[in-house]
Image (tube, rainbow, N blue to C red; front, side):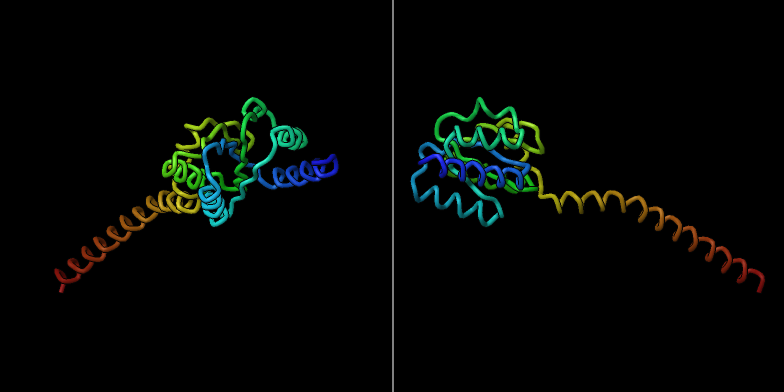
Length: 171
């Protein structure tokens, strides 16, 4: 790879990293071509990309984006899972595939600018998707209001029943 190709690779990776605030660093040792293709297909179906890059080029691209804390983990065969805006979807695909085939190994992750360990990535994968969490939050906020409306409606029925009984008693 000559100097211009390396510079183009760094610039391309820098742009991809800028568009993806969440990423996971993996070691893909032991994955054959068939499994690697399947892994990439699953990630692509989830809207996530996977980049295999030389460690020095990755370090330069990360430094260009002012990302720190990952330098120690950029050793050996390295693949970057660029998770985009939602870190949970990529973590689910990554941990499910790793559970099924015991590869790739998760070295470290970066979620919203903070480094996370492999165990934290697996815990993140156990969370429901963002839209489900938002709907659960909306349900939790709506439940007390629905209960209040039910209580008020019950009180209204009691008042109507008392007025109906009073009218029946007077007539």
